[in-house]
Length: 172
Image (cartoon, rainbow, N blue to C red; front, side, top):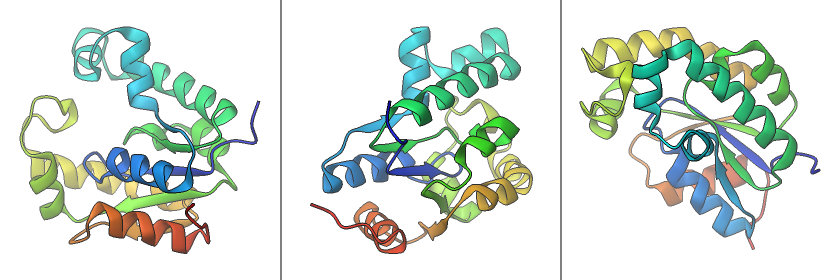
């Protein structure tokens, strides 16, 4: 059992959590873990299929369990799915931990996420739905975050460095 992740990344879909998380892990010489990937591996199917087949409530239950397991047992860099912070228990697990919220504006989100069906919560009107998601989640991301790092017009390397600087961590 570990004391938990060295860094936890939260933020909306497309904010770069997976890319930046892998870079941070490499720089720090620690393992990288993504709870969405944990769910896909455990279920043997994509998240969009879980949403379509069983619904969001079922997916959120899987997500709660995946986050709890990762926070308890992972000592590296951890990226959470965009909606993980919706759960009160998950937010409580993140309290006091080194959490970085990767933020971005709607135009950047549309450029990165696009119109793909692989994003089930953005399938109809991506701009409007992204704004609505962020209206519901922004305060939750901010609540759990020790640092907020804007990703707009920054490379993944620049975002990773900003996180390291803000959390006062040194890469290897």
